[in-house]
Image (tube, rainbow, N blue to C red; front, side, top):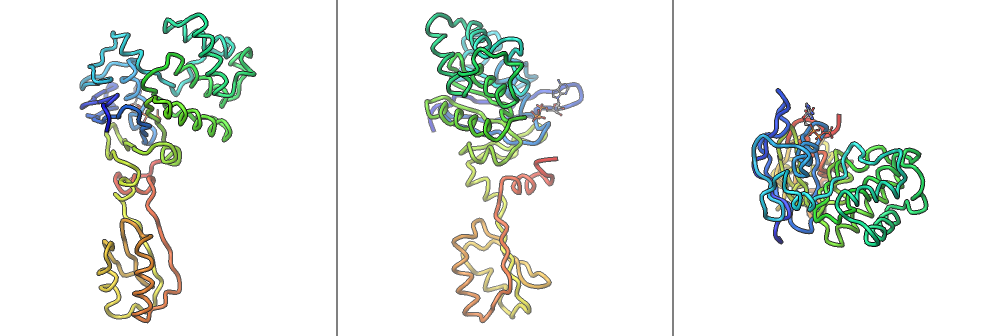
Length: 311
Ligand SMILES: Nc1ncnc2c1ncn2[C@@H]1O[C@H](COP(=O)(O)OP(=O)(O)OP(=O)(O)O)[C@@H](O)[C@H]1O
C-alpha cells in the first residue's frame, strides 16, 4: 500500500454524556476510495469534522500526508476538501458565484479559478445553470454544487458525508461518476454513508463504524467473509450420515439439522455447489428445495453488532 494520506489514531470525542468517538483508529492510503459505513449516530460526521479541522477532538492523533494535523495549520487544512452533510452552498448566490466564492476563500483567482469553476460546473452537470441561484435548485443539484465547491482547491483528500442525501437517482449516479473520476485522477476519497449498497458499489475497502468505534475494516471480500453464507436443503427424511458427509466437504464450516432438512454454512457457497450436487447424487438424496442466503455487508453488520444497519 502506498504512503497514507490519512492516519487516525485512538480518536476520542464526547458531547457531554455522549461518547461520539471511543478510540477510533484507521488509515487511508494515498489514492484510495475508502468507505465509512455505519448507522445514524455511529460517529461518522464527528470523525470527518475533526479530520477537516471543523471540530477539536478530546484525544487522539490525526496525521495528514504523514504530518501531525493542527486546526491552525492552514497549509495542512488545504489538503482536505469536505462535502458536508448540511449543504455549504449559499442559496442566494448563483452556482457560479458559489464556486468562485469558495475558490477565493482558498486564495484562488483570475483565469485559473474561472477555468476550474467552468470545468467543475460542467463535471457536475450544472454549467447550463451556472447563473441560476442555488436556492432554486433541486436537492440533487444542490448536492452536486456542494461537491464542486468541496473540490475547488484541488484537495488531496476529499471527505464526503452522506453525499446522496435527498437526491434523485439520476443525481446519485452522476455523483458516483464524479467521485470515481476524481479518484481516478488521483484524489483520495472517504465516502461516508449508511447505505450499504452505495459504499459497496464505490469503495474497495471499508471501515464499519458503530457507536463511536470501528468494528471492522477491510476489503469488501474479506468483510463479507466475516459472516458465512448459508444454504438450506429441504430433504425429508435426512438419511443417516448425510450431515457428517456434508460437514466433511472442504469449505463447509457448520451443518445444522432443520425440521425438514439441513442447513450448512460456508465462507463462499459458489465453489461448493457442484460438490454438494455430487454428494447428493451418490447418497441418493434428492432435495425438494434449495435456498441460499449469501453474505452482504448488512448481514455482516447484524452479525457483528446484533442490530440492523438501518433503523
Ligand atoms: N453537536 C452535538 N451535540 C451533542 N451530541 C452530538 C452532537 N453531534 C453529534 N452528537 C451525537 O454524537 C453521536 C455521533 O454523531 P455523528 O453525527 O457523528 O454520527 P453519524 O454517524 O455521522 O450519524 P448521522 O449520519 O446521523 O449524522 C450521536 O449520538 C449524536 O447524537
